[in-house]
Image 1 (cartoon, rainbow, N blue to C red):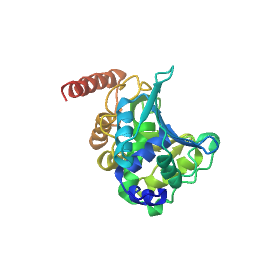
Image 2 (image 1 turned 135 degrees about the vertical axis):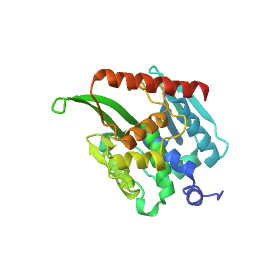
Image 3 (image 1 turned 90 degrees about the horizontal axis):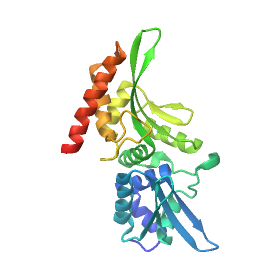
Image 4 (image 1 turned 45 degrees about the vertical axis):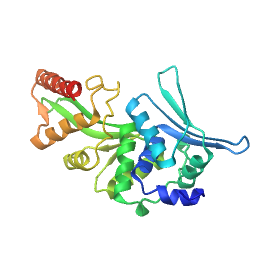
Length: 260
């Protein structure tokens, strides 16, 4: 690698692993620098072990042998730290300010200069950490049917990051919507396109926010949703039909999980 941060960023910025790191950090991490105390650190946090493993593996592939420290907070969130000046300088030369709170206007790179492959790597990583695939059912009073709720979404509270994600999806050929703090894909064509071209990082699972699908791999639920889209299955006549579908699908997916 070149010895300077500017030279290194030019070398690494076209690698898939780099864009996955950027996606993970913009979702659940940060980059900090305190020049006065000469303190440089990269932080990534989460409960999903697979994402932590991917983050550490990609950091090593891009930046070489690194020392990671970790601790688990009272909410059982694992916090990973890397204190390395060169790594911090490279990441900050790419995105100068990583603070996403209080609607801070992030100076994100222009997407016009980023290849579609790298944009896909970023979206896949960002959605894996901060997004999910939704599969539920809700009673429709007018139609007298249980309507299947199918969508892909990612939570983004920072306004500049929300617009950045939306523009990337649009460049990749999607038609996303913004629902307050979410960027959402609801159209059949977008769900099928995401399932075919983007997907989630392998092995990442649904969180406890979903009582129905908690613990199942996101890509497995994504495939179920894509199949429903292909079949044109948008509703059930009774709640019992929906529960039977959930029970059958859950048992099939967990068999796949346990047998590999």
